[in-house]
Length: 284
Image 1 (tube, rainbow, N blue to C red):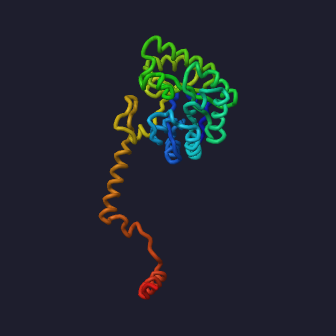
Image 2: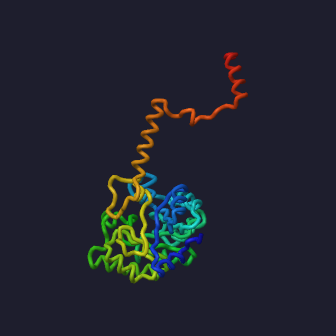
């Protein structure tokens, strides 16, 4: 089993092999993803919505991200582990960017970090890369900038907006990113960026022509909803299965069907005889 690295992903692009990436936030789901052959696992700041119940990714802290990144990293043997730098962990200064990216490697045991934003983030990305930390870029719909963007909308739909994202992709590649996430952009734009880019593109709502695809694990497993983005395909409906299992458990507990003796422990025969003799004596 060959360990996937940032160099591996570059090689996959060169060979035309598609990259499969998912988010994961804990040990058991990361272990399942790794054993299923997923190439890269992103510990996304989407854990704010999916795991912590925040209304957006903005409240997520570095310490919360590190807690989940450590859990994921412990489970992974093959996949590349990427930690998402949360809001305001890198925007304020280059020093913050290097320090917090370094914490993801040293404390979170990630193998790379992801940074949102275009040419305005170049100085930070270059500094992180110079520090020896691989960086995955993120363009298009960037949730950490949602107030500036005016909502969760497809980006790059006009020629002017598309040119800006195309230029951002070029600039980020020159800054040293090893790959680019393209979120919620028209497939034609994602295809053009993929064709012009020397680094792999990973799409989420960016059509079929990227070098790889990423989905939030809970979305593809049917653990979120009922309203999901257009780009999400549900490969299972585990939420429905879980709800039924819990309802069945509740009902069996209420009527005394669970646990049965099948799910109970027995006392050895000799010890049981002693217990019976003790029960005849009565309470002291």
